[in-house]
Image 1 (cartoon, helix red, strand yellow):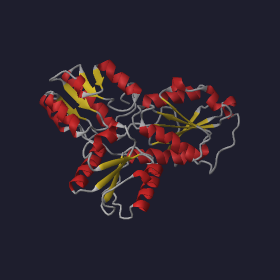
Image 2 (spheres, one colour):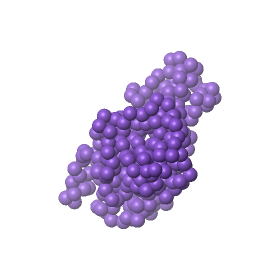
Image 3 (tube, one colour):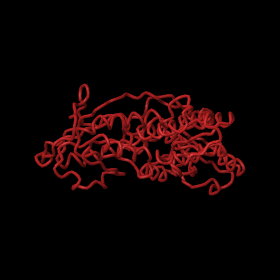
Image 4 (cartoon, helix red, strand yellow):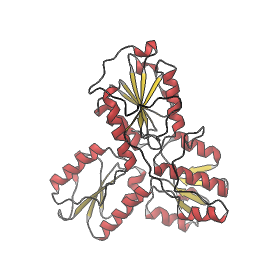
Length: 368
């Protein structure tokens, strides 16, 4: 599911101490028809610190070097953000082989394998690594456990860019497990020397189930030094769980390739929402989804700018849901500094970066 930034939408009225929600699914009525429908707006939602940093990297690189700035893969998994940065001069490619020799390339927030770094260096590319520091932490865990000759179980989705990057750190030691049912296929050399690590954007509940299955097979399974599922993923899932029992319909704003956004839809349904839908933007909403609804829940994924949430709110308000109540379960203060080489270049050009700073505020463009 999707994560969203914590700024209030203009005109909304946050609940003083959290909006009370029912303990079960609410009875459907026709409140929207008489204009008494409500929107419960989850907080936190939207941009996490890693996404905020990655988008900032591309923007500042464009300001500093001018277009084009090449970006391997999507800088973050959001269609609107990628299209907006493309209009400013970012060129998104699938592999570094597509980048002209000697050009500048940004690695996405999801991280890359050592092999990608090596290919970029071989082509003489000036690279800026926008990998989320929380993903980098998982990479370092993989390297450490591989050096100690453990079998490593990477809980994550095969084919996801983050998983590919982590796997590339120690391919001879890592096996990827995507679901609890895949645990039975795991084979290890020594059951007493098995450790698990995970993709940062997974469902907390499903990951817990997978690890429990692993532990039943390997009772001496070693946990990572700290939680690999990132704070933002967990916070957004908790926020959705809080409001889901009291909504008829849950809307998650986020792109189809956003793992955390897809998980939010699943979490909403599991927590009791009457129905749940994921959309990239307000234009994808369908009026039939809200037939008979009186309360709509709204959240967004960690790669989603607040402007897209505002547009969904406006769409709903025009259709009988005028009241917006923010339900906050956590206040986030985490920020990450820009990559060191970009900070140095900015400083050399008199554009020293002010980070760490407060997360950007809601504004009219894609960065908000």
